[in-house]
Amino acid sequence: MTYWGCCTNLATDEELDSHQSMIDGSKSASLATARRAIGTDLVRWAREHGYDRSFPLKNDWHVGHFRSVFLGRRCIYVVWSAFEFIWLEE
Image 1 (cartoon, rainbow, N blue to C red):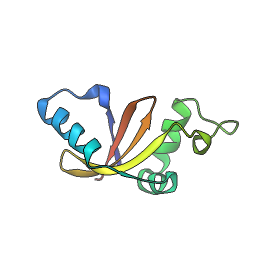
Image 2: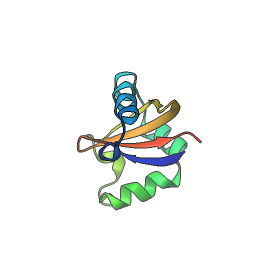
Image 3: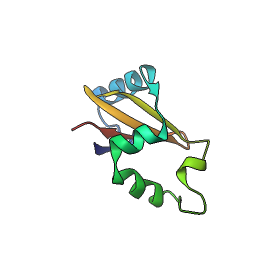
């Protein structure tokens, strides 16, 4: 999967509509599922957001992982601090 961006990057009506549909049609995904789908880019993202061995992403119960469709492509997104970070299937 390829990182698309954060919900704050939404710029067009199509992206805004697709984002709402993504949220409305999402299904919860485990961290393991997100890791398998996203790969090492999730590790990079976690480090950039302050996670490390002393506080790994798996221990933060405030973070959610979801499967859905965004802009017509399957995606995994991570909800962190009320922001959606989106990775799209290639």
